[in-house]
Length: 312
Picture 1 (tube, rainbow, N blue to C red):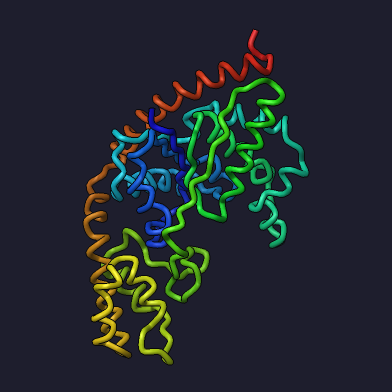
Picture 2 (tube, rainbow, N blue to C red):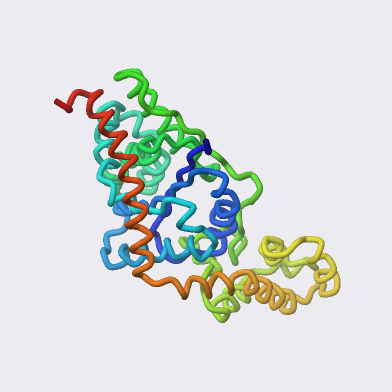
């Protein structure tokens, strides 16, 4: 029997190529090896996004992004967190098992407090909703970035606390951290991030891509523009790039134009696929996925309710 994998899709707006090479492409290449669940974490998004129109569109968009990038809805359960009420129910039970000091150690909470930002109660209890997301499905594998390892550690702790209190119920999941893709640099050399405004849009037009690439900061003291090359080697083999960069030492405009064409060659087919996916198709994908996810979650929660004593 295949191991079960679950990952959360953040409905946070337009993806960039850093998202693609850092998370989406590795996922597409391996999800078929598992019984895979892709959950749009719309309730998690409420900790920071307060615009209902934007959230609705983001939910549609992130499903289109994953399907366009190669995820087959018939080979993975794609569903929306809010369509399975057992997530928030189990999160409350976990909240009653862990302590306030334990939750205060969460990186997302500490980072906001350190920056002087308001940390709402949803952000504070966020780790237990995430634990519920993972544990409801007897998940074996959770693919995360190295900086997100703590989320899976919190899920294991929640599972352990429940198992000790009420008997063996939850499987303790393992994180799967991709070591093959380093941090994708942005146009300014920092990590590519929307917050830094240094991104190259994943599904942008060729003009959008060209504008972003031509803005890449170059080091005028070197013959090879490091930031351009660091992005270029993500879309083309380094062995193929060697002669191009040797023949155009110092010719930054030529190298940027080559990068534009190579990014376009990767993105254009996905962009075309994405344009062919309708909102109604996405809604049907999410409905079908919710039906499958709900059946599993309801069976798990029936056992949980019985063990904690609320079932009569």
